[in-house]
Image (cartoon, chains in turn green, red):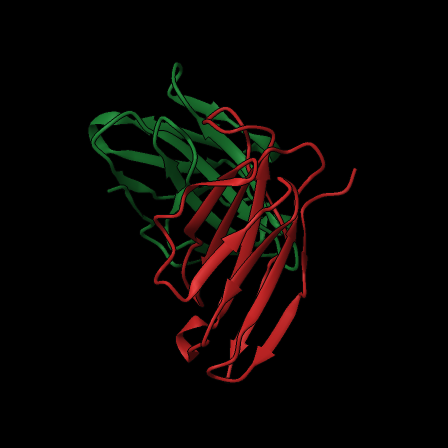
Amino acid sequence: AQSVSQHNHHVILSEAASLELGCNYSYGGTVNLFWYVQYPGQHLQLLLKYFSGDPLVKGIKGFEAEFIKSKFSFNLRKPSVQWSDTAEYFCAVSNNAGNMLTFGGGTRLMVKP
Amino acid sequence: GAGVSQTPSNKVTEKGKYVELRCDPISGHTALYWYRQSLGQGPEFLIYFQGTGAADDSGLPNDRFFAVRPEGSVSTLKIQRTERGDSAVYLCASSLGSGRSNEQFFGPGTRLTVL
């Protein structure tokens, strides 16, 4: 069975600070990795995804994530956060069939202006 | 175009009652997914439809939960004899097809409260 753990439940940063959110997964086979974001009052939406190839993945709004296979990690990063990045962030994994997502518990990010 | 819609947005019911939650996927999307998100947790997979058939219902917690998609579009999640532990946000997602390359688009969810 697949599982995902996100290390930080709550993160508070000031604008322009750098962000790194941790995500570790466990799964025995080929995985597909995702970061989703949920802005206040909005739906879950896809931030970025990794299937194969370059382990450094760039997503929307300046976010990127790095897949490190040896560490079973897929951490999310952004060099300089903005107040508008305040949201909850979910890491997720699917198997190669891609038909179900297993989510981590989420990290609630607050960016202070 | 319209995204995934879910009705009702909020549902309050009493323990032991029956509820139905509806999902309208994006037009043309053949795959539909139900997830449940309890307070403070990430979404948990319940069931996945490809067309009219439930291709994977391994996430349904017990036989009180059932979902249908009779015409391959709208889906209804049905919960019998509701319990307080069923209180959660029920999320629906759809994708153009099945498989990893198809992004799942999520709806706003139905918040179910069982008193």
